[in-house]
Amino acid sequence: MLHPVVLSGGSGTRLWPLSRQNQPKQFLALMGDHSLFQETVLRAHRLPGAQAPVTVCSDDHRFMVGEQLQGVGVGSGGILLEPIARNTAPAIALAALHVASRDPDALMLVMPADHLIEDEVAFREAVATARQLAETGWLVTFGIRPDYAETGYGYILRGGELAGGGFQVERFVEKPDLATAERYVAAGTYAWNSGMFLFQAQRYLEELARHAPAIAAAARAAYTQSRSDLDFIRVDAQAFGASPSDSIDYAVMEKTDRAAVVPVTCGWSDIGSWSSLWSVAERDEDGNRHEGDVISVDTKGSLVRASERRMIATLGVEDLVVIDTADATLVARKDRVQDVKTIVDTLKAAGRTEHLFHRKVYRPWGSYDSIGVGERFQVKRIVVKPGAALSLQKHAHRAEHWIVVSGVAEVTCDERVFDLRENESTYIPLGSVHRLRNRGSEPVELIEVQSGTYLGEDDIVRLEDVYGRS
Image 1: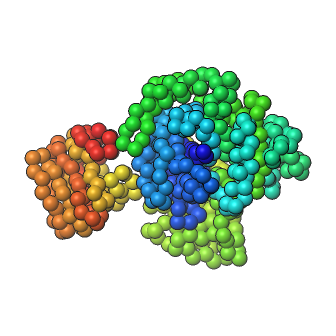
Image 2 (image 1 turned 30 degrees about the horizontal axis):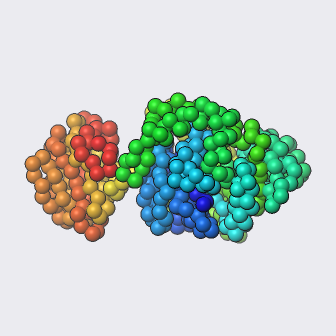
């Protein structure tokens, strides 16, 4: 059986300020109504005979993965939580151990969560070809036929043709300079390395044990000692942390003698920068891509994305990227957006948080939006989903005022449990044990005013939590 495996560990820093550490690009709707992650699982779901997808993600994103799967009606074959990032070879090993434990003959289709594929028919045909090769023991990668010289991708040189389609891999090539990339494209025997793979789970584990035994042993120990937590699988952190951090290319594909490549043209992009998003997006007659409330005059070749909160106007500019969010705005030349990571590094060095969180932060129970901050106060707009509840908690440094603006909230404050309705308010003293719950069928929306000497999110002592965070 075919088991799709979705790798969802990326941070997407090159798409800042829209992509943040707590909500990286794979969970954003960049090209339509669905996120890149959702498009990936739907694409896999539509493949003939595909089982429910297995997802490998960080602990911080576990609830987002679960919610986005539910949002498109796709079941889960398991959500494996990486306690620490260790690159693709160990992550794929965890997934291989998981699917092999349920299906010894399992075929794995490994896909990054943040890639775009526009021609699904061509993708399906390539998967069918790769499946035939994988069933005979080949470890197959998908090579994208290049239509221009790209220096941001690795390349694959194909060797001899294989029976049933595809080619043996001659060698993998690191990201080249422009002159070398132009030579590769002209040769016609090179393909971009897509980072997608198809192979038998057991074959991958065998090759990993042969070429990278430390990774294989660490992954097996981590998975053997795993435990279930709600809908998630927590692997052992100490065992997994002992694994070397290597890519599947370096650990296995460059060393095995059974690597094959299936060339494909399927409208693929890794959406690795704002310029790559502009290049695959639908544009107007002036080469502009506008999203949101945008007015442009004498503007050409630009990507302008307005937030929900304000209009953006451009005048007499060319080849710009303008990305506006509630708390940060990026303005850059289109040919410089590969360097956005330097801004993220600057934010980290300055001890700021704009690379970590949006102003609006999503939680398993709903969301909160920090709409006002002062030296000793903070104002938040909180939305609690139907049937959801915040943890039973207390604070050491702040008190809170809650004003309900819609819905009915059940409030716990020390020994009292009571309902708070629209236009009603309550006070949560510093140190009080409290909880907010929505037992209704509609969202509860309230305004929270915090006051105190410290207002950070780490001033929360969780005593009880339905999401296992206590």
